[in-house]
Image (cartoon, rainbow, N blue to C red):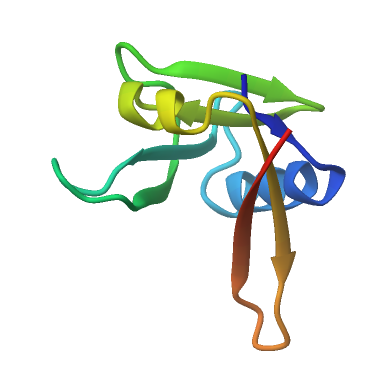
Length: 93
């Protein structure tokens, strides 16, 4: 299952708080089109039916079925660049 670094957990929590901050708020990863190799990331208020839920240190990440398979045994890291944009990276566990 996907794990989050401390940086990723902090950034996911900060994004959730900026977008409503409900108890179940987090980020959702989903396939970006039926044949695309990329994943879309969006703030959400909670899980969609069928989502896997990763709750690590209070940071909630929701994985749509295709994203859950793609991110199986990976580590999610995140950094904020000088312009303030969040950059996510995925590495093998």
